[in-house]
Image 1 (cartoon, rainbow, N blue to C red):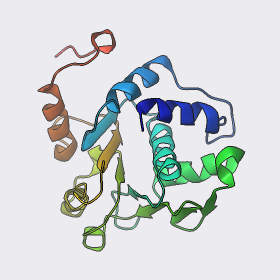
Image 2 (cartoon, helix red, strand yellow; image 1 turned 30 degrees about the vertical axis):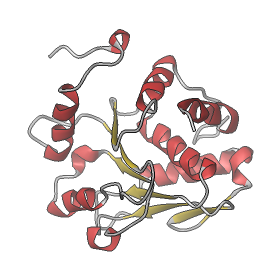
Image 3 (tube, rainbow, N blue to C red; image 1 turned 60 degrees about the horizontal axis):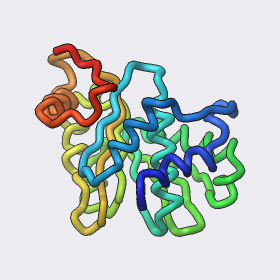
Amino acid sequence: MTQTDLIEFADSNIKLNEKGRPWTLSRHQRIVLALMYARHYALRLWSEPKKSGKTFLAAIIALWEAITNSDTEIICCANDEEQVLTRVFETCTKLIKYNREISTSATVMASQIKFTNGSVIRAVSSDYKGQAGGRQKLTIFDELWAYDSERATRLFEEMTPPVTELGAYILVVSYAGFVGEGELLESIYKRGLKGRRLHKSLEVYNG
């Protein structure tokens, strides 16, 4: 499966956003998604300012992985022990509600979405002990800057992509937060900045 499939999936099946309004991927989203999925990465990070559509994009990716791959498990993680229904999961349910192309193949339940192809999207809290040993292909962390507790950090560590699942990976969608806070997210930024820049026309870093 190529990255074109993700963009085509969004264009063909997600005609309305979580508010029931028409939308389309922007130019920079299409370019970055193409680069992000051109090869396999065990960890993918999408970071933009608040209210820029990060959660919405993560929900599209979750639905794409679930619908185009049978018997696939997708996990949406919360950073709070009491919180289960993450914004990504809730956005998935709204996209299913407003888009007939995918609603016929999905059954929305309290904390999971089941698909006719055997795939499932689950929403989980930061109870990392209950998540150990999973077989998920995709784990989504929303707003990783807020993962500042030991419990939340251990959840991230427990959700390391299982080697038994081909192409398994973690997707992080988050705004930057503040330097010195959210050490987990900051460590990922530092790791990324040591790598090779893939698209200079999108470069905005002035460090």
